[in-house]
Image (cartoon, rainbow, N blue to C red; front, top):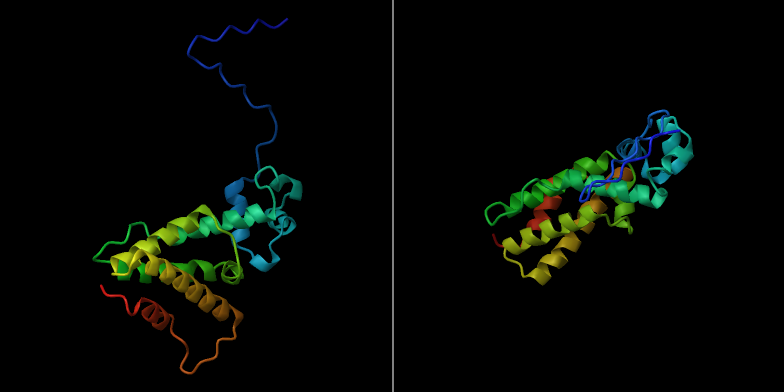
Length: 193
């Protein structure tokens, strides 16, 4: 007969039970998101991610509720990667926005299909709020009213994502070739700084 469990000391929680013995997890949420980021977003399914990870589809559901949550997690990770580590200032708001635009291009190009998905009503992860806040702050520091800065954020996001979706499609004819820096220059024009 096992010994009785002692009563917990007042103010202290009882010790957590040890996990049941078994095989350690082969995957975790980070591995699932990494696998999803390496896939074409148009072909992203829970089954495809499971195949890529070499596990049963049911194993993913311990970590992710389904495809929509997976897309949200991918979106949140991309947002985390692209937001500059510093807040824009009155001295560098222009450079901050240019850095952000180039980071969006770099990270989204690595995830086929994501720019078009984001452009057409993608997933609003918590990270999007940080991007929107940074862009609105930067444009406000550049001299726009908060209302105009919000409008400029919509234009900025739509133009960058539209450029990336068109670039990814391979149907971007221009002679000489179109220059992403020219797009950024146009997006930042007309703001005093």
